[in-house]
Image 1 (spheres, helix red, strand yellow):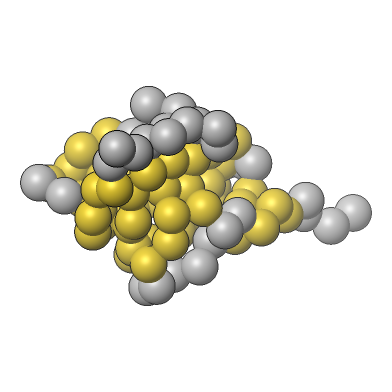
Image 2 (cartoon, rainbow, N blue to C red; image 1 turned 45 degrees about the vertical axis):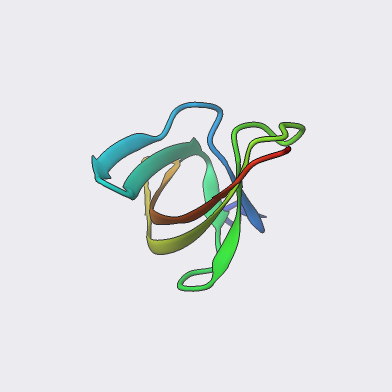
Amino acid sequence: MGMPLELNTMIVTKGKEERQQENQFTLKKDGYRLYPIDIPIELRHTIESDYRATAKIQKVEWENNQTIITYQLLALHSSN
């Protein structure tokens, strides 16, 4: 039986991100997920939210049926 894998092309935080340094955060997601690394991708609070930012993922870790991503916030985009 293969490991179920989900491909994500945006980061959805749902408010669960943890700040590590000024603009560096970690986020734990259930399951094993693939993310693009070292390229700017969209970050949102929820899939439907107007809150948008650009982030660059620096590290992806898989363990205990969880994915932990470390990312750098590059820019915030307001909805006005």
